[in-house]
Length: 179
Image (cartoon, rainbow, N blue to C red; front, side, top):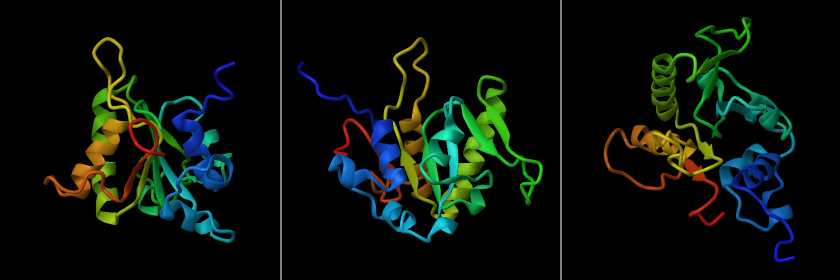
């Protein structure tokens, strides 16, 4: 009886991506997402996903976004996991569909694609929404969480130098951040 509802950082991120953040939760919004969620701005709703491998495409498409496999065409990056990266495999026209780079299949390739993607995105100044700012999972070996991707992206945005933290292009949702 002490709790009416439990809301996760993923729930808040989902509602923000859907354009419902302030109206249904009373939480602050992010101007970058507000601009993308304006009616008629479908061309601004291409999202590149660092995922968990479990429902990533459904998560973004069900809130009105299009999964974008080419970082150069993305308007937003969503970091919701550290196990999969959805790419076009280097194809310029996306005709060969989605290529899923999995850390559990080839960790070296995953790391290379992650670093290459973050570097390209930083030059393009693409904003990133981190749906869980935890940096490590409390499992054996302390594997990384999405917050670690946000930290790595900030380093690229700051060209390897100590810069603003949090960087204005990186929005973290969940403890210890106020949203």
